[in-house]
Length: 402
Ligand code: PXP
Image (cartoon, rainbow, N blue to C red; front, side, top):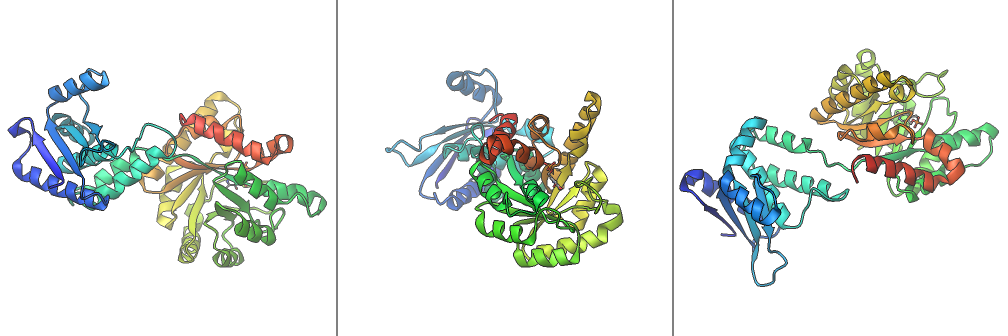
């Protein structure tokens, strides 16, 4: 058998459970396409694992799991050894309100991925990749009883690298000021990508005051990342989007006389209309995001409308100047992000974000992506688009500790 489990004390775990855990871990090795390799697992007590922590890792306390990879050693078929404290796993399962057997599997998967050099403590993408693999394996080998709770718990361990989607509307605003053929938002989109943008956003407004259909079509054809089309709930625009198939549509409320989008959607008033639009766009393979205010009700209604993503409106946070108001607004954003993530919604945020105010918002771990336009285009006038995007991306990553 590829997976061997030893116990330092017979009483640590029942024989039947041990056999079933072994079978499930063997399945995990098959999924990893490594059925020919071996893994040694040792179940022990808190006291015993503390000794290993002290001797090899310089810490005098128990941890749930320690992995010792042998993978690079040519002489052995073993991927390595995984030590698990059953005391710790029991205590933690109780503390987190999770089912013991499934929590034990989660810990073992975590340990095995460490044997394969996965690391959740370094870099931007490595933690994300590790979590993705943990979830994939757990879904395949978990016990059915209370499985969903463990999946949710895993997902909460946020390792998402924060992304930056750059809105190029205001390059078109300058163009339209003279009705000239330049500056071209298409060029800006390409340069933004070169600066590290993870996506390009354009708002095709009902009055076509800046971005035109032509811009959206060429940008869609030319960029290497994803196109995010912002628009109002409008029959003709939905038809346009269904034909063009951007990666994502962000639905926003729109008023002709507004200078820019003034707030989130009022879903209490237009839930049916929005749900219908979400369905039509989803049927064309387009993900839908709803631009909402940082309110619990708005998050819940977004879920009800069938959206995959919510973009939390950060405009009020950006505009308020009084320190305590800013703090309060930041907390509203944080809470809304937490509720949304808990409902399995992907969380984005945007509006009014600048080089001066991005960092506190970017530290909110549930937010996966920021949609930023005006401040980046403004800075690009002086330092160039590529540099302006690069600087913003660095600030975002810095506030996540990278
Ligand atoms: N998100 C949404 C939904 C928006 O409407 C806008 C403005 O077009 C933005 C983000 C970007 O806002 P700003 O230009 O202030 O960065």
